[in-house]
Length: 216
Image 1 (tube, one colour):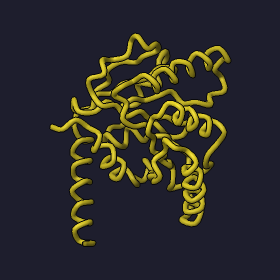
Image 2 (image 1 turned 135 degrees about the vertical axis):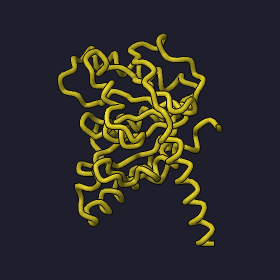
Image 3 (image 1 turned 30 degrees about the vertical axis):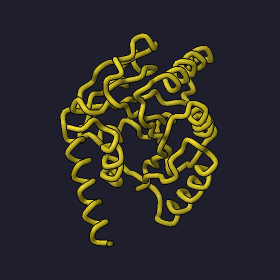
Image 4 (image 1 turned 120 degrees about the horizontal axis):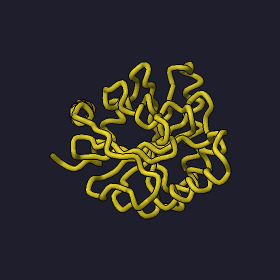
C-alpha cells in the first residue's frame, strides 16, 4: 500500500510540474467587476497580507522570475491580476491587504469589489490564503477567512517563508494555524508549507492546484 501511495504521489507531482512549466501569460488587470475576463477557465486566486511573499510564490510556482512583477507596476497595485496558465487554469493575483498607505475609502472600495468577486465568480475553484510562517495568523487574515466563509469559497492556507523558522517553530506555528482552520467551514483542513527561496513545498502546491485545471 505504501509503495502504491508513493507512486501515486510521484505521478501527481509530475502532472503538477508539467502544468506549471507551460506558458503563463498576463491577461489583464481588473479594477472593476465589469472588466473581469470571461469565466471560461477554472480560477485559483492568491491572497495574503502585503509582504507575505505572494509574488515570489507565484514566480516560483511557474518557474519564472518576473511573472508577478506586473502586479507591482504603478496603477495595478489595487487590481485583480489574471494570468492564463496553458489555457487550462487562470491564476488570479489579488492585492495584498493590510497596506497602511491606502485611504479608508480605497480600502472600502477594494473590499466591496473583493466581496463581489468572491461571491459572484462562478468559476472560482479555490483561493490560496498565504500566511507568513514567521508571524502566524493576524487580524487581517482572520477577517479574510471570515469573508471567505460567508462567500462559501473553498480555500487552502499556505504558509510562506518557512525556511526562516526552525523545525520546532514551524511545527508550533502549523499546529496553531491548523487548530484555527477547524473553526472555519470553508477552509480545507490541511495546510501547505512553502518557501519560494528554498523551493520548498512548491511541488505539493502545484500538484494540488493541477487537480483543478481543465484537462488537456
